[in-house]
Length: 213
Image 1: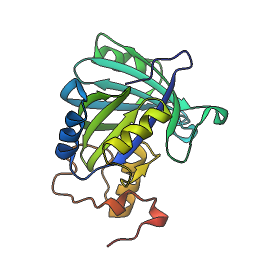
Image 2: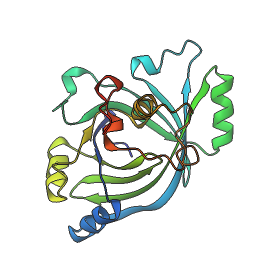
Image 3: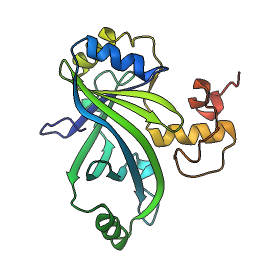
């Protein structure tokens, strides 16, 4: 759900939440409107032959939900990063494609290889100029808020999220942390892989900072 602007900036806050149903009720009570009903997403991340994308903070992703989209993300210029300690600010360009499988083939023919699959269920609302994505991930529940920095902070306060843990990392990097901290050896962030696996909030810390309870 990119911010539509000439600069292609995506400004976003990611928070861990314990109860998405309660949060959804709060959004509705505050006057939020449903933008997209709950949908299953399948995402495939690609790498180039030299595996240079991820180390440079670049994401090339093909997503299938109610449609199919190809997304490119990269770090934004540091001069454009408001409140970097609280918000993710990235360059994002996204296009709709007519056929997921064909786009997958084109990317591979161009030399890109799939390196990770990750799944989620997402429900999207809008409130006071902010897009709110309720994300049911295989390893836990998160909310992503996208808009201007000021609008995001106002919605965080209105929804009672001020004390929730924020993350500047992508879902993929958090997956790496969880696998390292819990000794998991699979490579895809899927519901099948996480069946029966309990993931405490502490497991999302960088491995050197992980303190098991």
